[in-house]
Length: 378
Image (cartoon, rainbow, N blue to C red; front, side, top):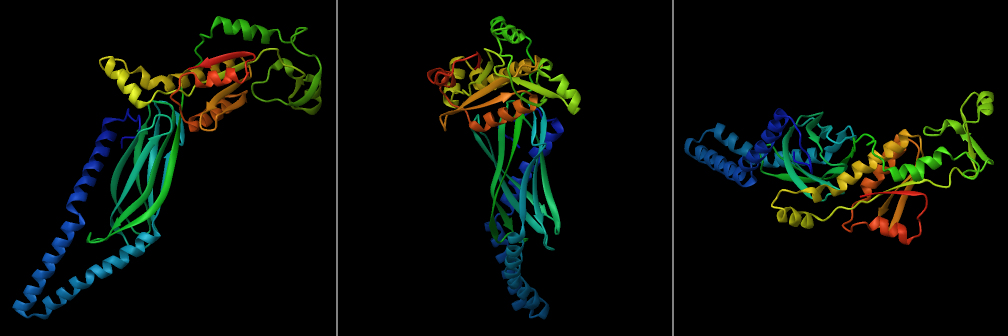
């Protein structure tokens, strides 16, 4: 199965998938309805000739059974097709870049009748990088059982990848008839970055941000007025813990001041990815040596994750933002933990990319949102 940006499968896994593809193509040719009808009519004619020539009741019986078989086959297969329940799923539904996930294609046949062959066409695509890949697979269905195909997949780029099947085709055991059943099933897998904190934050960022946060309890940097108290959340600074209330209530309580700092971090992720046509032109112009344009967005995601993890390692809450071109608005969230970072990054995956460089930055500046320390990742 060739999903967008899927690779790194073992030789045994690739061989098994190729074998399924060739078997599907062979079945498509060998069991086409045209060939099946020719074979069936030939057998019926032969049976009739034998009946007329030998005048034996046995051949009469065979001829009658052959004539009735298509009607029986048609109705039984139609009954089974109405009761089939297909489903798709990824296991796990989220993994890190370069990790493996299993795509499960399952068809539940609750009837007592087996099915000789069904075809299911899987359409796979990426929200970020575009491109579609449609592959048709054939399988037999046992009666009263969940019949499954599994495909190990791996991805070289971060984002959301979706597998979708709109319909399945069910063939009767003689391959004289086929029935199309709407499926409308899909499954998605989220591929998260695996880049560790870089440890290379720009000195200017430290000077503008961390120094100020380090001194944020000095006079003039933060108000000493406590405006609220709440339970401790991962990422809160230990200096904000209200120790007296913590001891009294037997749980960690945090003070919230009037102003935490006169400066704060904002990580602005550009969801910029040049179109495939632009990437192809640049790749051809470089003599097919430089394919960096294809990976612009993926590198930005990796860098945004790395910078964010570094901020979290310093226990510094920050705001993560990205621009949603279709709604022409920003999505923003205050990040205090890795779980919150994963959630906002997943939302960014569903937002889709745009082909205008520095679009988020230009909108951010024109909207007058400049404040604190902006970390622009592109």
